Image: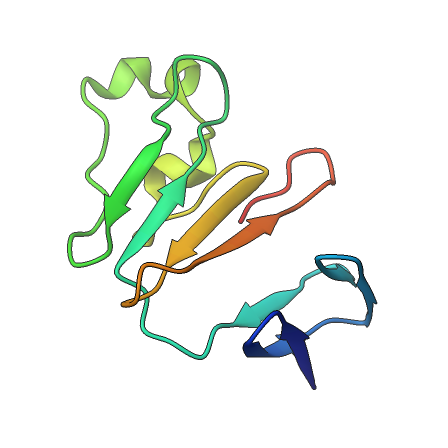
Length: 112
């Protein structure tokens, strides 16, 4: 299925979805949005106040946090072991033209 966000037509995977003012609400155990552009950067939101929250270059994979003993207190353990960039609760993709697609998840422990 496909949804329209402003001037973007976005591929969607969700059990259900509906348009709302300024965006779309997707629902399901797992939902996915497939932007119609190759993203340059991803805004990664940290799990807590001392977790990494920043724009990251998608040409470079995440690096594990060292020392390993600090990992459980520093960030979501799943995110620390992931080979792709993820954010806790929210994230954003920046397209080649500088436009940003904001992504958010409202469930407790949700990842973007």
